[in-house]
Length: 323
Image (cartoon, rainbow, N blue to C red):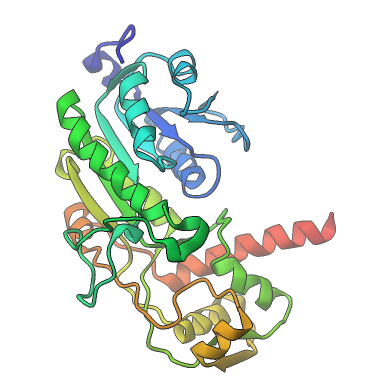
């Protein structure tokens, strides 16, 4: 949707306008923090306002993207150098932004997920691997999540060219880092911090890719308005392959603490309903070389990223203890 638009060449000669959809919880919050450091952007954040950022230099717009009027009335009509979408989870989420966002979009960056791929024995999984063709009922409450993310990508592929908008879909693997509200690394940190035993599979075969949330942020920054990434999709993940046992070694290193580890069979873990955050008997291995080579980007070793993540975790826990 077009409103009163500042000419693109005039706007970009000053500060570039970036609109972030979501942006107050985990990956989006870190992206805002990192983008502020560049001092090269007018930063706008549009979300429901449940967790205000209250950061100098960030204009927060409270609204729900599901309601057209809140998009039209809340977002200023500017030339948007980039829209970075962290929270689009359904086809109509994309449609409403493209249809009703005031101003003009130059580049739409959508944060998708590697979960959109079908299970395969061809590893590592590259960007052209087969995608989900239906929801996954075996995942319960998350049955629709990955399939809907794929539908969002398809909507961008169809609608953006019609509107003269460049798009980029980024598919991060397992994200870790500060502000992570998902029980992944923090599941283990809680046990380690309180000196409780950690149960992991006896089978050390399953291997996973991770991506440090700060690296994801830097990748997005390098993509902003970058013609080299237009109208393409990319996996975002470190080339390091990590098993449960290797992860325990990393945790012992970064926590400077001997971990009490108990290794059980997959059957026993399932019987006890131990909520381990990663698959017990299958790989999650993706190829991130396409984007890495294109951007000339080097990922943070997991040893370094987890050290910073645990330091942040300790600060939070110590603050809780002292309050």
